Each structure stands twice: as structure tokens, then as C-alpha cells.
Picture 1 (spheres, rainbow, N blue to C red):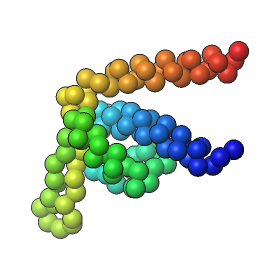
Picture 2: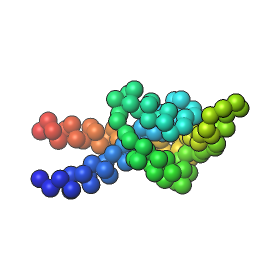
Picture 3: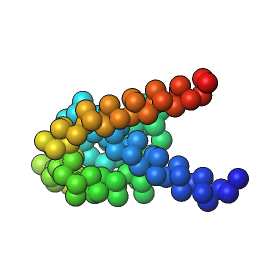
Picture 4: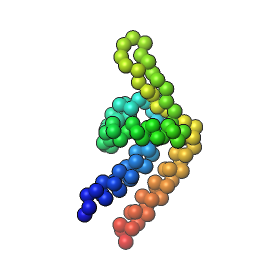
Length: 113
């Protein structure tokens, strides 16, 4: 097996999957900064590194699936960019979930035959 081909495939697969997970997380929790998202995913058995998450968040914001704003602490600490699901993100989420579920069902059917 060509390990580079596998890594490329896995990278593409994970991007779409993580986008879906991000929309679901932000719909549920409403607003989170990047490190909070990483911890949220980790607590739900999904390992993602910062180098994967932040470019993905930027792309999702460019696609208008997310909106962000800076949260500046009143007392001390660093400003943090908070992400929320946008109206467009809310609208596309059911379609992404439906596509995922159909593909998952098809894969299971193929495995069972």
C-alpha cells in the first residue's frame, strides 16, 4: 500500500467529517473558541490537531458556514476568536447529515454483501 495515497485520502475524508462535526458541535453548544472545540472533540473521542482545525475553521467561515468574533476578557487573559454556526451553516447542516447517513448506510450495505 502506498502510504502517501492513504494519507491523502484520509485527509480528504476527515476534512468533510470534521466540518460536519464542527457544525453539529456549534449548533449544540452555540459558541466556542478553537481550543474549546479541540477539547470538545477530544471528550467525544475525535482527535484533531490545531494544524487541522484552524485552517478548516477559516475555510468554513469563508464559505459562510460559520461566523466569528473576538472575545476580549474584561480582566486578564488573551483575546479568543469565538465561532458560531451561521444561518447558512444551519441551513446546510441537515443536507450534510442526510448525505453522511446515506453514505454510511451504503457502506454498511456493501460490507455486508
